[in-house]
Amino acid sequence: MSPTDPSAATDPSIGGPTLIGSVRRAMRLLEVVAEDPAGATAKHLARRTDIPIATAYHLLRTLTHDGYLQRDGGRYLISDATARLGSAVSRQDSLGDLHHWLDTLRDSIGAAVYYALYDEGEVKVVGQSSGRGAPAADEWADFRRTAHAHAIGQCLLSQLDHDGLLDHLSRHPVERLTSATVADADALMRKLSRIPRGMPVLEREEYAPGIVCGAVPISVGSVPAALAFSLPMSRAHLLDSLADRLRRQTEAAFVSLAFTVRA
Image 1: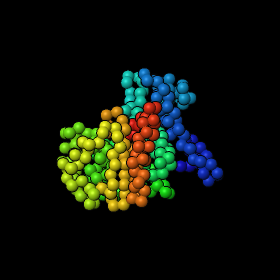
Image 2: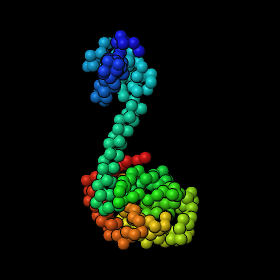
Image 3: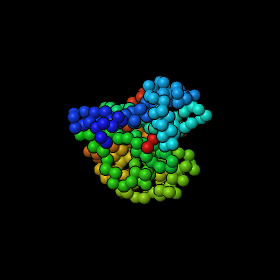
């Protein structure tokens, strides 16, 4: 691009950023279109953005051709693809809130914490927070395949109905990971059936030697979700008290906050 290109602003060689004018104008058009649910005409958009009408027409044709806008008669509207970009920003904001909350919980209980969903038939760890003095458990065996063995998975599976649980186990059969892992599907079902609704799920070295974990169920619409923590065996005596503490803190938080973040 030459220094005289009218679509460029300051050249970086003379100390400033290169700003592509056509991109900036196109983004301004998208912003103004998004402000009006009924759509807007090219003339209205040109007037609102101070863009010459010929340039506005050219940019609107390009944005429509590339799927960022759609045209209904003489009006331009935001396309589904552009609307999804807005939803992605909203999800990123939610993820930021989630990670901040997880950091707060980690510092409060002094253990690594995890937030997980059971979505589309699989365990998905959406967020975690760990640090010095609160190390994360090593995922040495895929969490999705070994839901029967760790507190996160058991907590999520306990929220499924009978058919949902059988479907999961048909795809991810029970396998022994340690000497403490449940022996088979029947043993798992017995354990899950003994967990009172809404109460923490605890496991001691079922997933990995030297690691104990706790998880509490949380309500995120119809999607089973869980908040969990892990501890080294040397701190296993804290398992019950921290699980109860996490349950109470989670209940308090979800009075005013419900995360709907998905992977």
